[in-house]
Length: 266
Image (cartoon, rainbow, N blue to C red; front, side, top):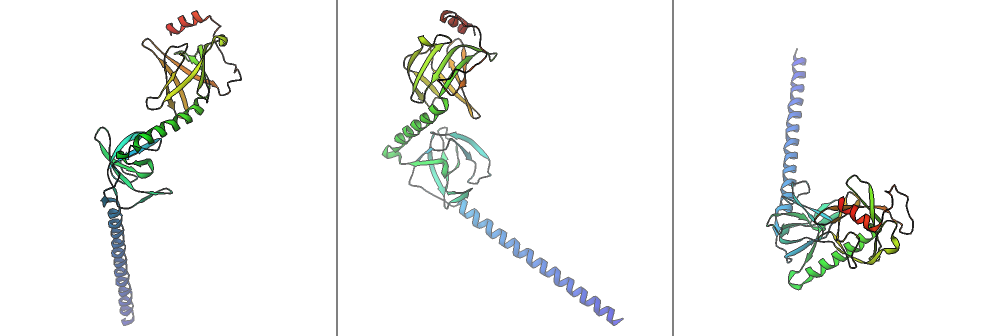
C-alpha cells in the first residue's frame, strides 16, 4: 500500500514539474516575442528627418500606404513621374523581397499623406533644379520605350469592332504615315511626338483623322483613340511588321471622300 502511495507521489511530482516547465517556457516565449515586436516597432516607427524635400516616383506604379509596413492598407497609387514632398523617413532600412530601403512619409499634391517604399522614389534636391532635369529624363525614357511598343500598323475600327478606312503606321524613329486604305500613295508623312504626361501623340504634318491620338494601356497591350468634338475613333494594331501587308477582313474599298463621310457617320 505504501508502495502505491509512493508511486502516486512520484507521478504527482513529475506532473507538477512538467506543468512548471511548461509555464516557464510559455513565459520565456512570450517575453521573446514581445521583445522582437518592440524592436521591430522601434525600427519602423522611430523616424528621422531627411535632407531631401522632394522626390519623383521612379517606378511605373507605386503604392502609398497608411503606415510604413508592406501589408498596411493602401491610401492610393501613384504613377511614374509624379512629384511628392518628403516629410520624414524611417530610422532604419527594411527588407522588401531582395531590396533594403527606407520608408518615406510623403505628402502628395492633394495634401494627402502616406508612406511609400524607397525603391519607388528618386530623391532630388528641389533647390538645385534637378527635379526638372530628372522629369525630362524620365519623359524621354518613357517616350523611347513607348515608341518600341507602338511601332507597327494600326487600323481604325468602328463601335462594332469592324475595320474601317483609316491606317496609321508608327515607326520607332518617330516617323509616321497616315492614309486611307488603298490610297497609300497619297499618305501623309511626318514626325510624331509623345507627351507621356497626358498620354497623347501629336503629328507635325497632320493626319487623315485631323486630331491627336490618345494612347491607353490595357493589360499588356495598347489602344489608340482619335478624339474630336463629334466622335471617337479607335485604332487597333494589326501588324508589327510595316513592310508586310497582313490579311484582315475589311470592308470594300472606298474613295477618300467616301471614307471621310463614313468616318463622320461612325
